[in-house]
Image 1 (cartoon, rainbow, N blue to C red):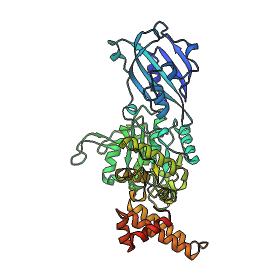
Image 2: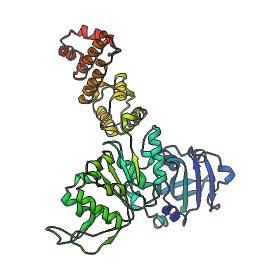
Image 3: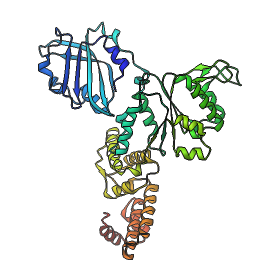
Image 4: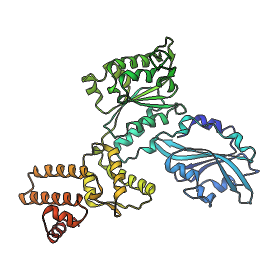
Length: 449
C-alpha cells in the first residue's frame, strides 16, 4: 500500500518515476534528469523492468520484490551503470499499488545523489514502517468468503467506525485488525493491541487509562494505551473477558473521546479507532451478560465474521502448500507435500485450532520428518487419534456400509494407529500380535505400505 505521507515527502526529491503493472511491465516513465538518465520513454514503455536492467533478477529488483510480497521498500541505495558506461548512485523507494486487496502494480521513485549528499536526504519512516504490521497479502486464501473480507477491509479502512471481529481461536483476528490499520489513513501512527483476558481486571484500568504517581502504592506517572494509541488504532481482543464494570468505563471513554488517568483529575483528549475481537458469537455474549448491550452496539458498527477453517476446505490445501513452502525455505528442506493418508486426514479433520493449529502441525512435522512427504507418523498423536475416532464414528453409523466394509474400515484404523505409534514395522506387528508377514499382507491389502 502507498503511504501518502511518505509519497508527498518523496515528491520533494525524486528525479525519476517508473510505474509498472503486476508483471513488472513499465506503463509510465518520467525522467527529470535527462542529463544523467539516458533512457527515453519510447525505449522503456511496454518493456519489463528486468529487460531494461538485465543485470537485475526477480530477487534483486525492488519492483519485482514489492510486486511479490506487497511490502514497500524505503530509502535504499543502488548503484547503476548506464548504457553509456556512466556510474550513478541513487536513493530509491518502491511502493505497491493496491486495488481491492490485490497488488496491481508498483511505483519506483529515485533520486541521483553523490556520496556526500546521500545521508542528508534519507526519508523519515513512520512507526508502522519500523515494525511491519500485517497487510492484505498476508491473508493467504482461495476462499470466496475470505476474499470478500479482504475487499471489505479495503472499503472500511479509511473510516473511523468501530469494527468488531468474530472468529474462533486461531482464525487470524489480529491479522484482520492489523490489515485494517495498515490500509487506513492512520497507518503512520501506532497500532496498539491488548488481550483483555490476559490482564487481571484490577490492573486493566491503569493499563488502558494510565496512572498518576501516588494514586496507589507503586504507581508512577504512566500513559495508558488510549494515550499511546492516540492518532492510531487500539485493538482490544477478547473484549467479552473484560469485567462488566470496566466495560462501562470503556464505553464512556469511547463516547467522550477522553480518558482520565487513575488518580488524575484532568481529562485527556484522545483520537483513536477502536477495533475489538471475540471468539464467541457477539450476541451470545450479550445474552450471557459477558458483554454489555450498549457497548456491543457502540463497538459493532461494522462486524467481520471470519469462517473457521473447516468451512473453507479449499484453504486447507492452499495453506498447507504455503506453509510447506515457508518451512522448506526456513528450515532448508525440500519436502514435496503430504502422503495420501495425511491428505485425507487434513481434508476431513475439524481443525478446532484453525490456521494456527494447521501451521503448528506442519512445523512440528518438519522437525521430525524422515522422507520427502509428510506421513501419518510425522503428525501429533492426538491428531491421528481424534481423526481415527471421528472417522470410525461416521463409518459405524453409516447405514449404507455392509458389515464387512465396517469391519475392514475398523481394521484399517487399527493398523494406522499401530503404525503411527511405532518406530518400525516389527514393533507395530508386536503391538497387534501379528507376524511381520501377516502385517505386511494387511498393509498391502489396504494400500498402507
